[in-house]
Amino acid sequence: MKQKFDIITSTCVPLPLENVDTDQIIPARFLKATDKEGFGDNLFRDWRYDKNGQPVKDFVLNDPTYSGCILVAGKNFGSGSSREHAAWAIAGYGFRVVVSSFFADIHKNNELNNFVLPVQVSEPFLQELFDCIKADPKTEVEVNLPLQTVINKATGHSEPFEINGYKKHCLMQGLDDIDYLLQNKNKTEQWEQLNK
Image 1: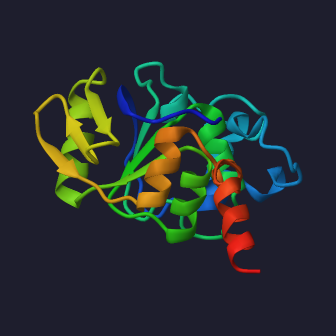
Image 2: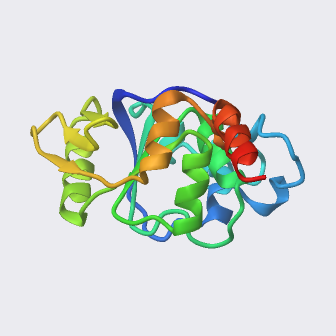
């Protein structure tokens, strides 16, 4: 899942639902595994499949009309429990970016830790994205991490987004927290020598 970020341009999968919580993203019965592999198969499991395990035809992930590595979601995405498995499922499915007008803080950090970029935009901009994607599922969105901008290619409208400087550096370099520490091992050892 470690992939460097720069500029991502993609069509989008729209999920215009507010208050999507982590139990809806990945139901609790799938949390027994401690390995990140396979969680994407159960992303939005209870919306995606019926009780017999058959795909629900009108759920967006089962609709071939929509594709891409950007999930556009309603306000307050990732609320509820702090389970990191929700971010594992999003990344495992293949989403690299989630766009919403508000993210639950813990879930937002879990996404960043799993190389999924949460992009917070204004509610009018989010609604414009939903409207454009509905009108034309081939609508593309460009997410530029170096410039911290998101652009609706259908209208040319753009918005800036915020990201912690450390997390931005890690995403652009393809580093997790341990990689970052190992990369700076010499500096740590030098500091320890100076402060004996």
